[in-house]
Image 1 (tube, rainbow, N blue to C red):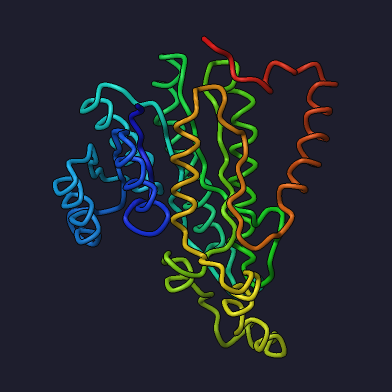
Image 2 (image 1 turned 135 degrees about the horizontal axis):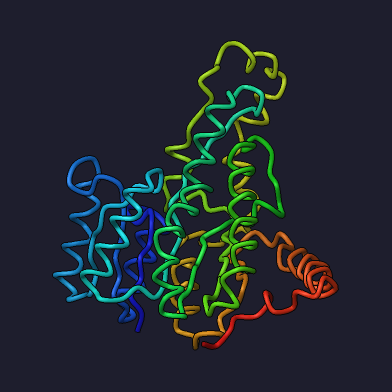
Length: 297
């Protein structure tokens, strides 16, 4: 079994994944911001579960917006467990609204959390993974880079950027024995805090007023997302946690590079297959075939 560090584990997919992996026998470090203050209730839930079910489940503080916090969290895990095998990038935030209504600073802040947070944790964890010549970076991405829905502009940008960052990083770490997995959940309107706690642009009376004709469309964004599911589908994000658990049960080196967990039948697998074929051909014609395979060191 593996020692796993997961970000954004206080609620939603992160919490479900931490619980599922711990129940599967992994040693799990569920991280979140401020576990002793603002997220004390979430931290307590996980600690109580660990005691009740006798799970190897621990809470660690990690704010992906801080390099120092990421460094401290990784150091704490290694000091406590003596190892770190899997890093799961899950932390993220959602913004909804018209793109023009968001200031550049608002979009930059979202990218700082959803994209650069990944880079910070990789910089903290990769020196250890490189030194041991083995490890797994698992990213909880999104089908959004393929489906690209309206009225979620900054979020789409941040998740697409995270996906690209995961991909180009995989080129450089694969020859060093570090594998990459990108899990791509489709939309989930229940069981997470994404829609209920989604941010809005600060500009609510200026630029946004110029888009008033689109307000009826934007207002039914969540309802429109719900309509993508086949009637009777249980759109429970537990399926994402179950897929991550399934993947980490596979032998190292045999885990999929991408896995789509989409209940809306949005043809993401087909799009991924076409892009993979084109990308692989391009990289191979450059003579860089080595970066496409995880080295068994």
